[in-house]
Length: 222
Picture 1: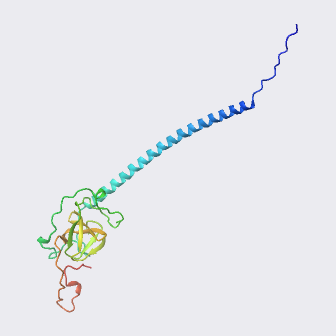
Picture 2: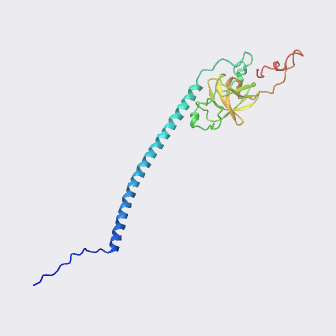
Picture 3: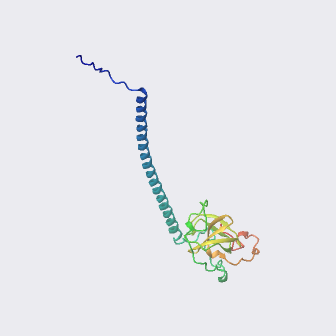
């Protein structure tokens, strides 16, 4: 009896099945790539947030150092009188005791986080280390200099005429931080009074040749 012949031809696969397997493999590869990229993106976001937090801490540290420096400058002793301006009273020029500024209320919060906004006023070299509870109205008792800091060693940024109304925001070491219109600066407290002074009457010159600038003791010195 003859045996049967067995066919050893290779098994054929359906092309659609092969295409399906390729698509499954592609989806798996894309899934792996997505998971990897997601993990890397999450790690990058964490590093970014950490860097932002460190930057904020550095900004706060710098701001604190600037405030400490301003406070240190504001508490420095006043220098001798400036011969070119009226800042420290000379004998006979100081107002009467009844015209001396009244004792201000106790200073409150630091200027950096208080109600006084000095943004854009770069001419102020020293900001107040402490403030009053609000503006207090005073009047100048002479033609006085307005300076960038509480001392005659600071630059003169403006001047205020006799009888000018000013708003005092702080008092430190014999100096007052004032607002005049939209400007700010430091004025010697000895030339401020809560009482509005009487208008000045020009004094008659003693001799025809005497300069007009010397007829009044309240005029600014050259």
